[in-house]
Amino acid sequence: MVMKKMISMLICFLLVGCQVSNPEKGSKKAFQFINEKGMTLSTRFRTPEGYKRKKSALGDFLADYPLKKSGSPVLLYNGKRRLNQGGHVAVFKFPIEKYDLQQCADSVMRVYIEYYWHTNQKDKIAFHFVDGFLCDYNHWKEGYRVRFNNNKSTWVKSASYDDSYSNLKKYMRVLFAYASTLSLKEESQPTTLSDLKVGDIFIKAGSPGHVVMVVDVCEKNGKKAFLLAQGFMPAQEFHVINNPAHSDDPWYYEEEVTYPFMTMEYTFSKGSLRKLI
Image (cartoon, rainbow, N blue to C red):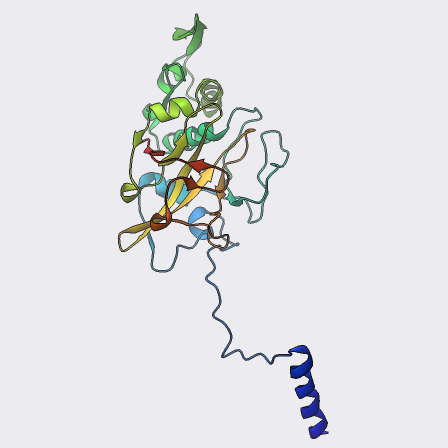
């Protein structure tokens, strides 16, 4: 019986390439960047080995912001699924209205607006229209509304004071309708990878243009790695995108960034990295 068993094993090896597993000599397990049980940015995404997250007020806000369950699809403003479901690794539980307005630049503005609102910095809620008009929430809550006449925007007092969140959403609908990547680029400033922080953007202004936002930053030996998130057209949920250079690792590494800079669905030219605050 022993001899038969040995012969059987030998045949297995020679004819079908059978292997006997050895747990002590197995290949090293790949580092897992995503913790599927994590329900916030900081708990869902593990930093690369040796990297430590960079602290900032906006970074802390986004780090603790709820995410949808791991594997959730990106939904459009109308509740339908986004056509391309292969490029994201997480979806923020970020508010999106039932209008085709909150697209890429609008999603970036929405992040800042929600941050300022929830941290009681409402005076900072202000963005420009494409025509250069500054649409600030202070005017809006005081009852001023935008009047458009001969391609010129002006404030007109036509409502009572209202500092409610529902009124803030009305403000954003108007803002999103008349702002875009063109205006967002105009109110941003160039920055560098060495000074990178949460809230910075890669932007191509145009019709259409595109913008992605840095939502997490970590560092090792002075070199940074970062996560990117985006909205898109049609209006859709704000989502963290993968890195096309390595599908098993969503982080973008400073030393890997060259221009043209390729993200999951868009390529940005040199000079596209900018800051808003």
